[in-house]
Image 1 (cartoon, protein in one colour):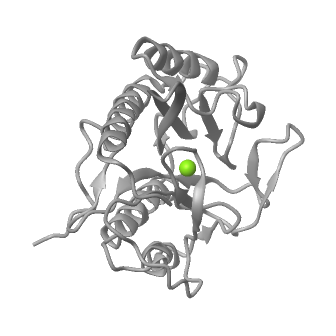
Image 2 (cartoon, protein in one colour):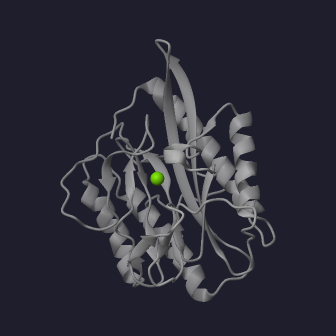
Image 3 (cartoon, protein in one colour):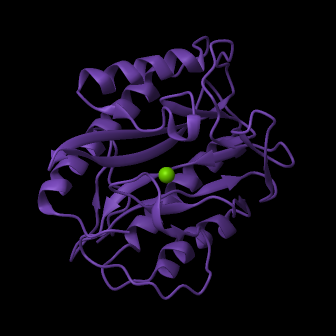
Length: 266
Ligand code: MG
């Protein structure tokens, strides 16, 4: 977790804005009949055309620009040309964008990370509610992200939404500090752990709840990447990178058409 320099913050805002715009484009493009590799290539082109770098590509040898995880896949699914979206699928898209700036002959990375789950065509009421509630838990986590609040305030806010819907809350993965590298300290749990770590203005963190329709247990498949639910029930995943301020947090990866559902209602 870092307190960024003003000029670095500008780069992170740029990365976040681009990530939000690409996410919106992908949500509109994600239809039955399209492959997950097509979505991946679309995103990579926009990132490179903007002079940015796909953060995930090559990260620990991950082959894609996006993580694309369908139905029982929770996170880290690999884009594939033979994986064709079909009506009734739940598609989770995870995206990282890096802008670089030079300092004393060295390149510094400034990174933003975001994820969204979308329904392909018509899905069941339960699946639809899973998406809505997982998104609501992210927004609750963002709302709790105030200077002076603890990491437990975030985890607790997410956990309460998960428990109200009786979802399995994934424990092995969670949010993280972000900025110069993709995953910085601290790990941000999506449930209460008793953490007393306090948020300070200038910190940038990614909050990313994952809720399952079944149990909370997950495992990694043979490909070494794709994480699936143990019981093969569907999963949803939402993520934003946010800046802690003196007031409401700034959501760096907000999509252009996204309603600011994290703002406190008057
Ligand atoms: Mg993340």
